[in-house]
Image 1 (tube, rainbow, N blue to C red):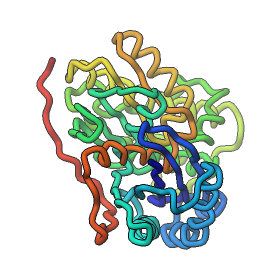
Image 2 (cartoon, one colour):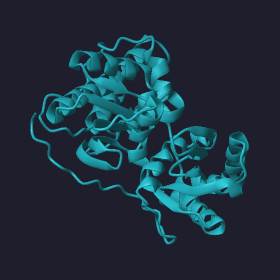
Image 3 (tube, rainbow, N blue to C red):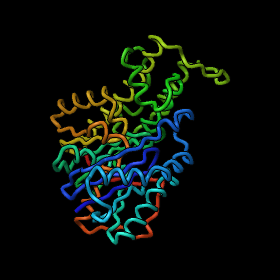
Image 4 (tube, rainbow, N blue to C red):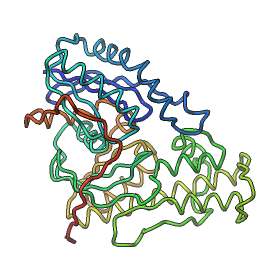
Length: 346
């Protein structure tokens, strides 16, 4: 049984082939980073046009790497929510066309929930129930995950996502796009204790996040308090490196502490982390230390499964086993509104 998966939620055009184990046979990603770098962020219209140009070649390459033909596909999976609606529509339209032409099931997959499932893929075994943490450019959310298909929201960002804050601070510091890798490189030689930036909700019982104030604190440090003064990125040197390191440490401190609180609140001893920010090495190291302290198992995918990809849509296998198929009028849905379920203190 071969599955073909499609991902076009943002600025990565991706396709994957996997089996029902699930075992990944191919995972092809065509990045659009170079297209968006000069704009300092992802331009939705540019992303959608690039998906149109690249999707069929990416699917063809995934099939070639898997050593199978299109007629060997037994089901088509697609990330249909959340994301940029124009970008999502490209993938959803292609998936529906393929499912109809091949007369095989169409399976919808939530892109954010699939980031947690990527940790299960990397583990090669069942990791549920667990606490799931998704840290990406558009979302920062904590989930209670009793099983692979149930995601109860414990907390989420109230403003900027962590990845978005990385991009904006990188722009303030003149480090370019994407911000996450740029900040990590710059912070490598900096002092993470040089600036005492805010850490919103760090000791609060609530499991929500807020990174807007942190981003603004960096802006004021660079520009000063005069809002009419233009922002001039600091020159390369120790001061800029200290700014990057102190900002990065503030984000890490909050993400790690909220994960610790979620483990204690739910009484669970497994933490699965996904999303582009999970590729940050200091963040991974901090999570490993916390997991050891809490005597919890930590599951983080390798770098290629942290950023947007189609292999994590192997979550579709869980739906396929339960015969949960999507209709051919499946739509692309830009927003994500998971149910929030309070968890009593364990």
